[in-house]
Structures are given as structure tokens and as C-alpha cells.
Length: 353
Image (cartoon, rainbow, N blue to C red; front, side, top):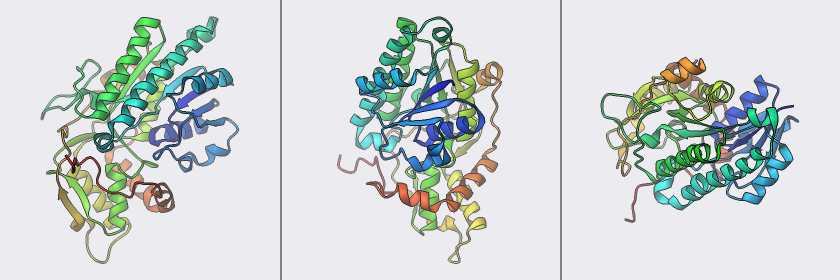
């Protein structure tokens, strides 16, 4: 049986990938996840009991431990999703982002190269390392235009800078050592099992509790929203059909301002769980903007559509409805993942600077 090594497989996007692979393919999954605050076994659901899923609670920055996983699992490919990923959190504590996103990616690339060099024949030829990244590495767009695979890097936050560095490392390991790397960059993901420090689950969580709904600045920052299930379908296609050494950008052409997203969530909550005190939009509260907040992200996914045959299934309307319904039906999941140090408070405000 073919084994895929998935890093960050208990996180938001990683767990969606694992769930989809277990449900729709016959591969085995070696899931490497240190289970920090945003990595939750609850997100894996029935996969935890599936004999094709094997969890390794390993730090990707620990070379010896990573080497042992490669030796034990003998994967046919790596899909690297493990990362510190919240911009606000990176402003408060950038060191963890440098360690995981840069040192961890370096270590994983180094051990993957060691393992790949030990392969021969068809296994060596077929091996792939898919490095999963973000559109935030490109910086901010103006009112027009789109990011693409050829856009110059211009990261604004410690998070996006650490991911940009990781992207460069992945490409360097391909060009210098020949490791068969494919790089992907995606727009803003949303969907089930997203840690509730991110916009959509945070708004849902606070709204049902009757708490103020924080909107940064004027709320006019624009993002291109991509449902997580559509993203992981794209990652699978990149693995199966992507060209070694190439990059692929994934976006759904669902541009919305943050304020529009918050109002859309409130409208769905008004319909699905009415509050007798009035519309949830009454809770919207404008707060100080994030330092260095990028104005607009949007992706031209033409290359992925034409070369990989990928297209998103969910519209923002259909995907957001499913997402809100999921969080309302899984309040226990939210409560369990919020039992750690994070309780929905504002991060990244530089209050002590």
C-alpha cells in the first residue's frame, strides 16, 4: 500500500486533507503533527480509528525524529502543511514561526533529501515533496490585479516572511540537490475544524455567545475565500499531475471584504439560530487595525485550472452556509479546542510597544 507522509495533518488544512484521502483513496497516511494548540485529534474524526492512518507526534525541527519516521514509513511522497499560521500570533511571538516554518521546513527538506537519495528505480523517480504555502508571501495588491505563480515576493508580517523563506528553501533544495519539489500557494481558506482565532470561526463563536464581533480597522481588507475541501482537492492534483520544480496558485475568485464576510456570517446566524435580542450584526465592533495589514489578496488560478484540471466546487455562498452549519452543529469541538491558553482574545495589537 502506498504511504503518504503528511505534516500538520491534525491542523485545519492538514486534517481536511487526511479525511479526504482516507475517504476517497486507498493510500495510508503517516501523519506527522506535534499537536500544538491548533493541532487537534478531534479534527481527524473517524480517521483516528482507521488502520491506514498512523500518527507520529513529532516536531519537524527534530531531525533525528523525522529521520526515524521516514525510515519506518517509507513514504512515496511528502505533503508538507505543518506551520505556525496566524498573522496576529506571529506579531506577538515571531520566534515560534521562525523555528517551525523555517527551521522545521529546512529539517524536513534535509531529511527528505537523505531519504530520497536512498531510493532507487521507479520509487526514486515517482517521489514528490509538495510544499504547501500561502498567498500572503506576495504582500498586498492594490484595487486591481491578481497574484500568480510569477508574482514577486513581498511579505508584510513575521508569518508571511517565515513562509516566504520556507518557499525559497523548498525551491533551493530542488535546484541545488534535485529534490523533486512542487510548491503551492493558496488564498484564504475556510471551512470545518478551523481553529477559532481565524475570522470566520471566531465570529461564529463570539456571536452565539453574544460577545462583540471585532472587525479590524474599517473592515475593507479584501480576501479571496477558498473552501478547504476545494484546496485539498487541488493539493491532491498537484501531487498527482504537477510538474516537478513548478509552482501552482489556488484561489476561488471569491473576493469579499472582511466586513462583508462578517455580515454574511451574521445573516446566516440570523436564519439558522435567531437571537431574540436582535440581529447578530448589532454586535459588530470596529477595533484598531492590525499593524502592516495587507489591503487585498486575490489569485489568478489559470495555471492550476489548465495544467492540473482543477476547479473549485464551492461558491462562497454555498461554502459559507456549510461552514456556519458545521460550527453550530459542533459546538463541543469548539469548546474542546478552546480549553487551552487561547480564549478568543485579541492578538497582534502591539499593545505594549
